[in-house]
Length: 438
Image (cartoon, rainbow, N blue to C red; front, side, top):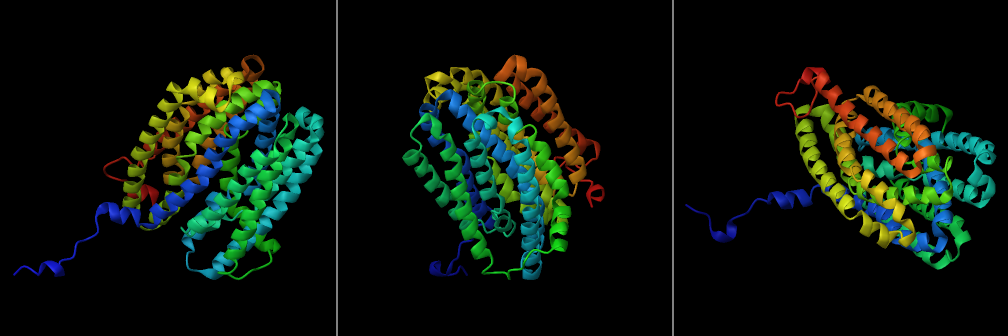
């Protein structure tokens, strides 16, 4: 007998299950963070490019790239290594407290070392020697970002609160740019506004984290343990920086600020597109880290799904950038930046390449514990980029730098896939060699 209609229950649809899943919530939260990090600058770029002019905006881009270099050192790969450990220790408050304390202690040590070296190198860098206010602004911004515990909430797969704080404070900083930055010599104010937003977000995020776990003063032992934990990921992150965030800085050592602005403008537009891929990568990383320990077959299925989705999205973004390069450059940068068009077209291949390498490398190799092999590939790419930059930038300036970056990314993607095929741990294989990755 059929049950009465009012007693029938319908199972949740696939779409309903997906949008209510924790991964979906984290992806949405991370998209909020990265929309702020990559899309909000697109709001300020037209204003700053016109107010500061190509020369001063190029100097600001140089200082921002220097701050990002410092931040990569201070972050020390904890966004990957510590996130992985938090994901494994979910529910164990003692372990989480030790981990957070150790990371804070490690960052204090890194700040002392990093800032000391920066002060010693300050007078060797022409833009900072002539514009010391940009140097101090870059240091302030890097310090503000250093202690942000987004990695902690990401590992817990509870990103909504931390994302809301990060978004709110950076929106305030963006508003401040329009209110305070009024003249070509005001580029340093952008750095101090960005640093102030980072300090506020960090303070609030830390305060709420310590309402759930006990506060512990960092000890030498816990700090050293955290440094050891993050070492391999630091090698990865620092190697990546050789062909990602540091290109504007490297170019600025060879060419005037106006030429730097042409490359920096195209790079910012390209990164805004690439940034749309990062939340998916970050949200899936802790899940794949967990599955890689418990169900490798399911991890492989998830990695395959992620690959096709992200590669397709990256390809679409690249086509949009290539076809619309003249329009985007004219609207977002202004009439004085026409030389950024060929750079943007060269860099338009990056979303597709980075989408593939992120899935195969970060989402697949790292959860399987293949840190060493991955780091060798990334380090090789970084060295290729630096060598090509030094050879090409003096003669071909912004165009040469763009080709150096693309060459490095091609090397990364091809090398990762070759390694996976060679070791028979390619996630696309129908029959997984589970013994090889256990």
